[in-house]
Image (cartoon, rainbow, N blue to C red; front, top):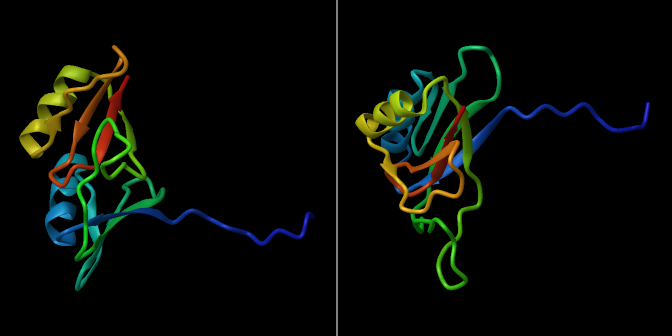
Length: 124
């Protein structure tokens, strides 16, 4: 024993101008279910029981910039989502409300932006 307490990552939290709207986008994208719905807070549960994805309303939310620049809000986190087919997954993401980012750093990864600007990567 190294004296360290047991710690488990329960989820990832994304800020948004409206937690419900952003949660609805990720629910369409991932097909996950709402497991907690409170004012200004929504949590989606992963079907495999892994960490969930939560959303909180932030009144002073500033849309991040991808790729970042020194004078504009930088992303603080992004999601990596493994897929079987980039084209099929990309079409699905766009139908759910995502936008393909202009800057694409790698051929085997596609960067998309959710409706409030959080980047997420689809990869094989």
